[in-house]
Image 1 (cartoon, helix red, strand yellow):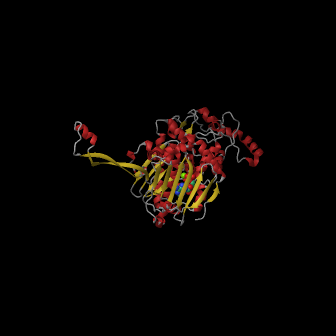
Image 2: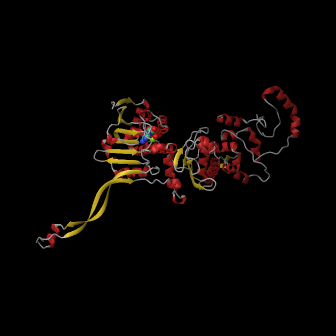
Image 3: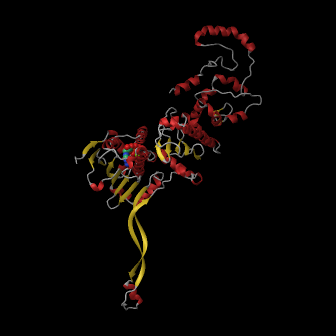
Length: 554
Ligand code: ADP
Ligand code: MG
């Protein structure tokens, strides 16, 4: 075989490794979560591709992860029967920064000016493959892609800034398909190379991986064996004299052997009965699946039957989503018959204004080789979408009914503008969106109120709801439009004809002076102390609307 070829890491990789090692040293155990999640991703990819190319599984249909420990030498191996990597993929994936999770991590680090970053926070990010170097002096990745004839080994030592790639030639190390990672642990971290330690971490970090994770473990069973009676015992019994015949006696012994032990539960949480799943489990699943560090504000787990059958768990995150126009959110993980299909179809399953909702959707009615085109034309998807949207509204309504008013205020602060966009874009759901809306009111002293609360609070003679849009509470409050309303407690009736006549010449004169700059000059009853106000025409956009449209011009 040709000799190993040496490569330098991309500069960012060196920087990233340095950061990981120096900021995560107190949280080293995340390495296992990262490596198991990579194995699980590789299995997901293979399972998905095998739907259209069943041949990919010809080297063994079993999809699993196996973890073996060698405590004497301080070695951990993690083997998956997933998609593996070609030689080029090794270079692209393990020599550069490819992943979005890792990029997100780097960005956060850059943003935080201080050298010491809160390791707890960082522990929540997907720091990826390089976290293997948190505990290892050396890492070897031996991998076989179904696209490649050969198996390749990637090897790198901590702080070497480089790696090598060579062909795997040792026949004992050949695998039919997938990836085997070997971690040569640092002296102080050899304690990780114990089955019990690994099992504890798997249970803690990877309980929602949907492929079986086996650990290689010593086991024992007891059996009864016939043994000669202990001569020492016989002696005491015989009062000093040794008996001539040795008696037979049965004894329980423990026979030891090593075997694979299933370490995780592989039943996906959404297939379980909602009554048997605790809030903690829903929250854990959410945090692990979406790399979040805060519990969600709400969750909803449901099954629909009948015309279309699917199961879903939806969540409202507690973290703010900034960009209303960002469609590539990867917030909804779509499964078909438990097979992970994609997290790239949010836009087909939810309208844009609900793009902050996260969750999983598992359908039995879609084809496994479903594509965006199929989704867009599918009647089934239209029904699913309708149901998902309703469930999302119910879930949000649930937060608004909570005893704790702060929860909905937090929701509104994060996602209020999304629902307002929904008012503009989704006429069909106005009835569902209306009770979710909150407004500041001139009467409510900076507290948000619902439309129902507004109506309850109306003056007996008040016939309409009056509103004004603004980009902040204070600018809305000080808008001259409101002067008269505020004075009256709500609004004005019209008694302006006389005044109009009296001032009609003045108006004409002003219009003449301003010319094209204004459409009309009128007498108005809106004001009480300001002399005049500039307003938008009935069918024109208000200044605030113009701002909103500019912000969303997509
Ligand atoms: P991410 O998982 O977020 O993409 P990682 O740093 O964890 O980032 O992994 C980088 C890339 O290396 C993966 O995207 C994948 O292409 C490749 N990779 C890592 N582990 C495996 C594996 N066990 N099998 C196949 N490919 C893998
Ligand atoms: Mg990863």
